[in-house]
Amino acid sequence: MSKSNSILLPKLERLLEEMGEQIKLARLRRKLSADQVAERAGTSRRTLYSIEKGKSSVSIGIYIKVLNVLGLEKDVLNIAKDDVLGRKLQDIGLTTKERAPKRN
Image 1 (cartoon, rainbow, N blue to C red):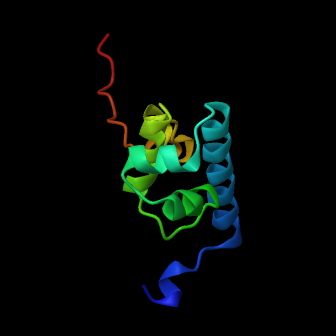
Image 2: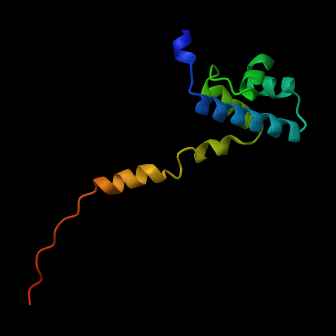
Image 3: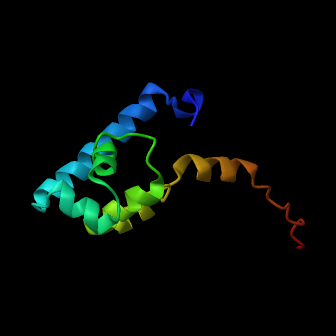
């Protein structure tokens, strides 16, 4: 991967770092070692550490495998679930049909 493909905006880097920290805390609350989670997820301990650091180089598929090991895979369904901006944009673009005048 070229260096230009791996550059994220600082805001996005912070989001990934926060997600990684939350995954790490979930692992620790379950009292699972990094080795246990990595093995169950079919990945390396090094990759798990990259996830826990919020590195963008790890595929979303591996993130989901780790979440599955932690019993959190359904959390992924919350992504874009409440798309407020998208709904507003959709509503703006909706056209309403004009009704025919009422007959008396």
